[in-house]
Amino acid sequence: MVARLVIAAPSSGSGKTTVATGLMAAFSAAGLAVSPHKVGPDYIDPGYHALATGRPGRNLDAYLCGPDLVAPLFAHGASGCDIAVVEGVMGMYDGAAGQGELASTAHVARLLRAPVVLVVDASSQSRSVAALVHGFASWDPEVRVAGVILNKVGSDRHEALLREALDEAGVPVLGALRRAAQVQTPSRHLGLVPVAERRGDAVESVAALASRVREGCDLDALMALARSAPSLRGEAWEPHTGLGTSPASPGSSSGAGRAGDPAATPDRPVVAVAGGPAFTFSYAEHAELLRAAGADVVTFDPLRDEQLPDGTAGLVIGGGFPEVYAPELSANETLRKAVAELARSGAPVAAECAGLLYLSRELDGKPMCGVLDAGARMSERLTLGYREAVAVSDSVLAPAGTRMRGHEFHRTVMEPGAGPVPAWGLHRPERRVEGFVQGNVHASYLHTHWAAEPGVARRFVERCTP
Image (cartoon, rainbow, N blue to C red; front, side, top):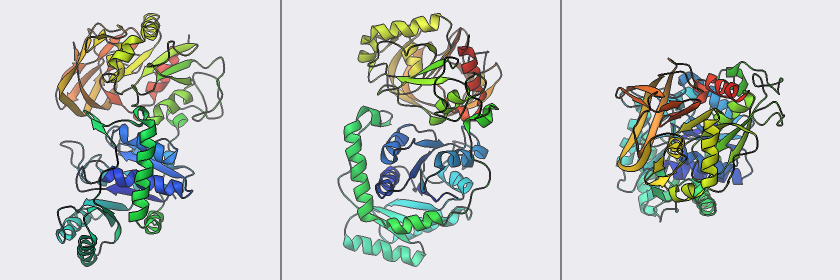
């Protein structure tokens, strides 16, 4: 049994991230082992969660991974922790477009059998808050809205009116945060600035959030509520399970141990994974699956490292903000040439979104790696949403015909948008082909979660092994 809370809200902008991150940091400062989670595909909030807790921030996405994997992935991440805090997405009942509550915060709360704390922006209301909370609490009897945290409260009198109204509604108030200057968490075109880009300032921001939550919330009551969650059914997800490998048989490309085990050995191919401020988007389970499939995963920073890690046999470049760092990435010509040479050598390369841009000929006029005969530029249009995809051709990630779900999130345009051999055929919300399969290079805007299709990691590592 894992003590757990889901932090939800009536709408975006209500203060979920403030409360969830502050709670994680406050509980951690009290000496508890806190497991941080985020509903949906977002990569940025989990970075702040990881900073608050010292553990990987993990996503719970019922669209990308399917509802059946939500509880097992949660249990995997929360193993050995005292409490888990799950930050919701958008409004509590907002799910995948056109598919009801699928992948909504409410859906995940039901799957986790977790009590929900509703964060309400109270800045422009008093007694009306009771009607609002009553509506959310009664909409779905399988979702237990067990308390409220009031955000942006104006005064003692305002707080008293809010508490009186909610007392009549029978929903306990577990905290009240006063209207104040926002803790500095700067944003730009795709949301908050990632932790990796502002580490020192981010540490201060998280500490300030912890202080606000500690002063304004009843941590003992919140912990008691978390402990009231019933036991979860079923086994925790493990990376070796989906791969059909044994945690006790390390040292080959077809079988390896749990994440972090075993130590690197000569027969484990090195998979280089891009990191640093320009490439911050990744799911923790991807590296765990690569290790379980038999690889030695080594992170490098394309902004600073002039060479790929020694012995690199495969390359994974995830998402991030290369458009922000285009001049610096371009200036690292030595590494760009090394990446291009690795791709020409036939080593497997998997690139998502930012990785796609990095492999292009140029980005906003700045030379990139030139692996793909395509150019990229910034756009005014935001491309955002879940996608249903099918692999158009065989690649280092999947055989032709493999169906996966993914997510697009970018303000850039690639011209052309697909190569002679596209990576994916997208079927929702529109029908089009997208991405590039070129030799052993797979590059696409589509973000996918490999836990939903562990064979992706196995196939990639097998291609790394001569």
